[in-house]
Length: 278
Image (tube, rainbow, N blue to C red; front, side, top):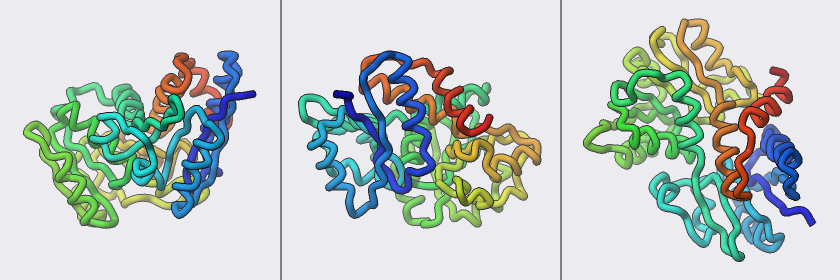
């Protein structure tokens, strides 16, 4: 019987995780199967109970469950506790262990474009959810000069910015409208929200009139591969980072936690690109 892995999120119809992981199971001759489960927030606890009953070997967690999933796990590792969010769960001896591969996965993709030292950068993070928390914490670890959180709910942005504050990294919070008026002061802008994701591909998290040509603009969305947000940033001369690198990197790190096997990241990347028509 195949070992079961999966994804818990809402919605999940857009996800290419099943395609990517199932292809890697096949290539590595690993007897596993990965399935995406659409779980509404009110049903998350029951879904976790179901994962235990089905003896799932592991699963990913995506929007909107990365924070609330922590209430239903047996143990959460130190990094995920610091982040305050979990994106990867491993079953060990009937116990569910939570961790977070988002931050490291994102950092590895950003380093392909940002070549100057991180302590010289002023970063704007759009959003204050689980992915934003992971990225904020890893950038704090890299001692970026400043992190500003912009969010629809300013109170959440302020709460998150206070968590990130350190002696090396100054942190603050802005409304989305305020952030739009100050874009030129940021060297890296990261959209961690789902705004612009398929099928609502004409939406943008904020307007880019004041964007500097020197800025690196990043979007965690990988479907579509180039969001309207990235397309407009590129038209203004900015460097852009799509969500494919983070998606592949965090998935590869999760795969290794589940199986102990190191997947071929380039083949994972090509698998997703082919599906996206790239």
